[in-house]
Amino acid sequence: MIRVAETISIPEDELSFAFARSSGPGGQNVNKVETAVELRFDAARSPSLPDSVRARLLRLAGSRASSEGVVIFFAQRFRSQEKNREDAVSRLLALIQKAATPPKPRRKTRPTLASKERRLTAKRRTSGIKRDRKPVSDAD
Image (cartoon, rainbow, N blue to C red; front, top):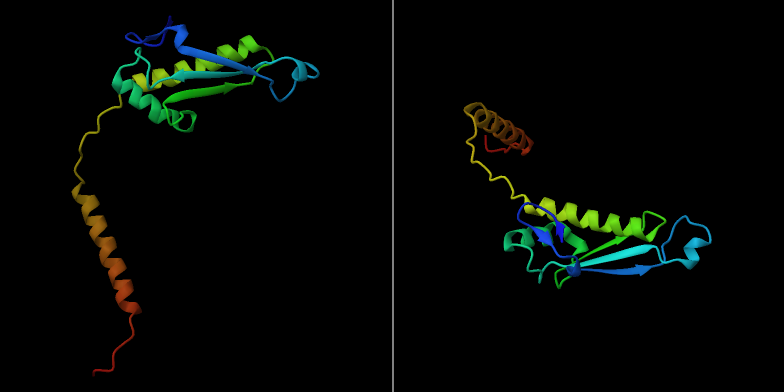
């Protein structure tokens, strides 16, 4: 069990790992050892996540989430498979923790009298500029 927040913990069997050859530095090791890690977490069907957290997680994941609701992380920053695995899991946990904190509710505010006056003054100025651009009529 991986503890994410006070109320959320994810069983390790909900995470699936796939390994691939990593690009980048590593010499001959790059061509032989599969150090890159692809972490898949099925957020849409996970019983560990509350509905509100699931919705925020899929929204925050953006392009990392597939259309089926699977969140995918690809880690290849390090030269060892174990470090890349830890990196992918930590990135997933950070995203879930961010989704677990509910957004702060917006408090309605009213515009100040001074800001209303500034807006109206700017509108009058713009209106006058546009009025001055018009051609003068020969009605006189």
